[in-house]
Image 1 (tube, rainbow, N blue to C red):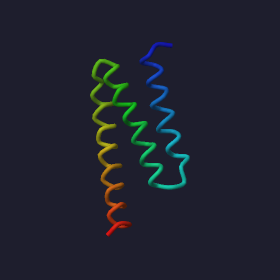
Image 2 (cartoon, rainbow, N blue to C red):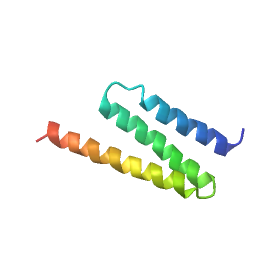
Image 3 (cartoon, rainbow, N blue to C red):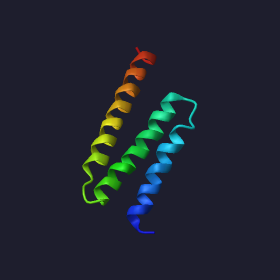
Image 4 (cartoon, rainbow, N blue to C red):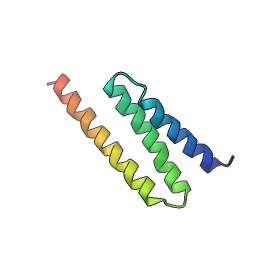
Length: 75
């Protein structure tokens, strides 16, 4: 196994683990970590833009909802 494959498996594991979370906030944080690993993986694949763009978009969505939920709980 090479470093690129290891990163791909780590990213997949991160995203997979996020779906085992019961708390939506924890799910979004763990999912964002998995997405960040996928972004690194996309760069390691010599700039695989479909992988990079999709995961950047997912992180942005996760951050949006985390901030939205934070404003609800801390008025």
